[in-house]
Image (cartoon, rainbow, N blue to C red; front, side, top):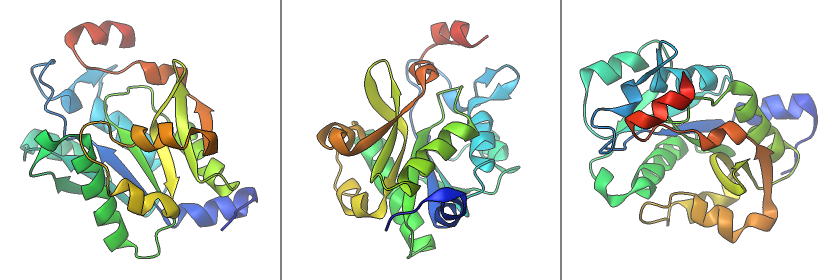
Length: 205
């Protein structure tokens, strides 16, 4: 199915879900990175604020452990938390869990956007640009930074079955590399900045 124009983008957004992969153990940081504050706002809240501007019907946040403080950060947003019982199996386990939940919530789902919560400069227009790429006929649209394709990334439904076969910690990048000729690259140079350890915070202040 090929979409064109703003009306068709709006139509596609009504059958799109977002999955936030936030089940990382934050071992290098030493505390939940989702709760790290950048310019006064937690990373998870910054990510969810950007997603809220997209106005999709379903957003799923995949977490590892139950954490009252973290779940309280989700409360202002219309999202569904999912708990990954085996985050040690890698990012792909969270991806599969989120995609499965999205397909159950909307059996007619046309697209899914995957994002992390440790990239502090994610914004609504970036996410909208990814979905717009799908609306224009591209099967996949991915952020492009530092010469590579990465997340946030959006996939049409024809990729869903392949996404659910992923294993390990590579996440969707395996598919992005394998199908690079079909991927629309959306510039996001600030995507190179993520919070992995305390030293990374200096780049965000």
